[in-house]
Length: 287
Length: 232
Image 1 (cartoon, each protein chain N blue to C red):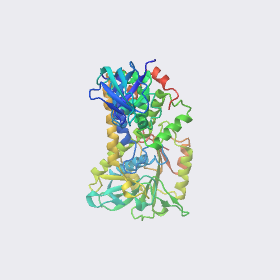
Image 2 (cartoon, one colour):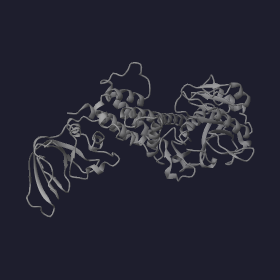
Image 3 (tube, rainbow over the protein chains, first blue to last red):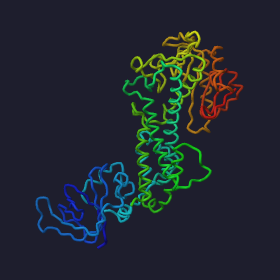
Image 4 (cartoon, rainbow over the protein chains, first blue to last red):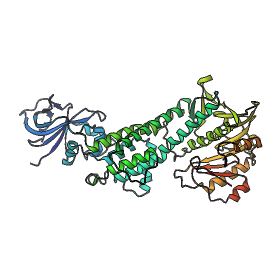
């Protein structure tokens, strides 16, 4: 029988042994796991805390003859367990590189069962830690934007005739979109903060706190310029910290030194994710 | 062992987390989006405060109008979109020697035009005694700020004709000599966007001839604030 690849985690129907070298399954039908199959063990049950822990191959499998009230009890042992898998990244970030996560907007659906089969490609993605960076980066950044911005971005790409499953191009476009609409807004905020500081220097009576308000909206829905500028400075810092870390590793084109932190981040990131031809083919046409 | 792709994704996770806070306004939950329907207001405020900073070199400034809280704790209120004057703060400019109030510098507030309709320029200079319901008798100067996503973008001719119309129905207000003297002596030196009512953009000039702008008594400032230029 063809070798299969399994993802197993603690759940009402699956109990993983403390050493990670065995697990047991309670099921109404006899599980189709076979000796020689490969297995990845997961911990955690929520999208946020689920992660991959170890992998190995099925050494033995024994199903009880008679079902009890919870069905058949199957005892499985694992050989060649590699503890602390190379993949010490959470499910939440890994899921964009896994084919069995067909709809990344509802990741919890893929964690409901205690065990499931997956493709060999998914198994290798997990065990080698070889994630699809372009697709992951694209979805991580896209889902960080408010829904209205996500919609604006997607409709602009569709009307531009882009293939929305070309994740390399989508990520480039998204970074540009963020640069123009969010990052540039942050630069205006910094300018305003500087102006308010200058005005305060000339007049002690000038307030230190400034709010943006809608005429009709209640006061608690007011936006603080100070708070928003802080959030923007955090983004700037996150971008330049990453660029700092990459500058040694990546040699950007010489003619492109100037620009915002966002542009530098983009320039240093892109050469590092171009090598995804195989992954791009796997996720072609998948949104 | 940490693979290169994991390291990249860790960085992207950090940036995404910071983006989440920066891409949404902290109180209203609205998207931070310069291209959204009301996304222009940050640029409007930036131009407004730029005018105030220039004026502060000559006049004594103070704040007035609507505010949250009292005393030292009070917070100024600035518009996301145009509204009644009484809904927002404004800056009062006073003679720095005598302390006499001379002007009110207002953000996007409504002013009643000569036919009784409300107009809302992004910046307006009113006389010191203007009430909460300003009319053409209170206006000295008006400006509109137009942000374009691409700095290569042009100020549209429609924006110019629209502004000229507003300027006309507000009675072609004229800037007092005291204001002109003040803004001429600001650090810009070569020019000031505030010497004439007009339009301000971060992009390029409209395709309207300078003679047309001159004819209607308005000006255009391009590339503001990075590489500003002014005409006519």
